[in-house]
Length: 250
Image (cartoon, rainbow, N blue to C red; front, side):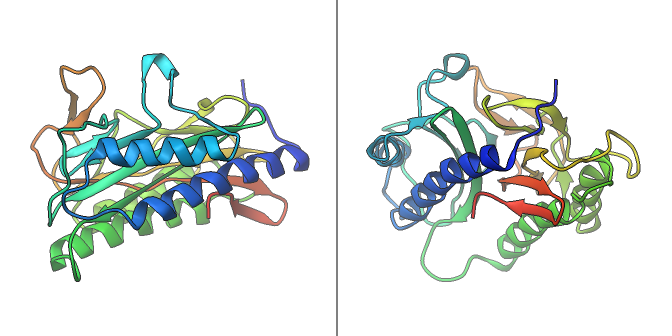
């Protein structure tokens, strides 16, 4: 079932997302070689709880961490680990969710680790992956179709020689972290449900440098690319209003 949100509910979602954004901004200052993903998770959870909010991921289907920290070939759901340190040249995708007063915020970003600019191939990959998110958002307007979003993401990614992950998708968000509808990052434009004001979606392209195939590791959570190519993950929570899409997580 799809739950459309009132203006008051969208404002509450905006407040939850504001905490996520602050957490991500603070974490960015600590993304340096040597820091562990466990350290990042600890800092995130402390900041979330200091805002009298709750980490949305803790307890979700048995997950026990405030963040998902996915490095290099890890696509999503990488588990924070005190033995896993960042190294120069890594890319890390950080996914964070916050529940405030019964409403969830959800936001993810991929960062390069190291001094100076990333190698050109990584710059191009991250740029196109991020652009695909905004192409999807631009396709989200009153009267358009759900798969207009999906097609916009897929076309931009594949036009640059990369691939979109098909086994994991975006989703609606609100009182529940994951609500209907699912939002694939691939599809045929002009199909799917018609978009109406009050719809709030977490759009989250997962883009691989190589093929789209992925698998889940034995820990039951961490998703990696089958060919071990690098993967990027960008996510915004977006509300659709009569005036167009409004990004809540920025």
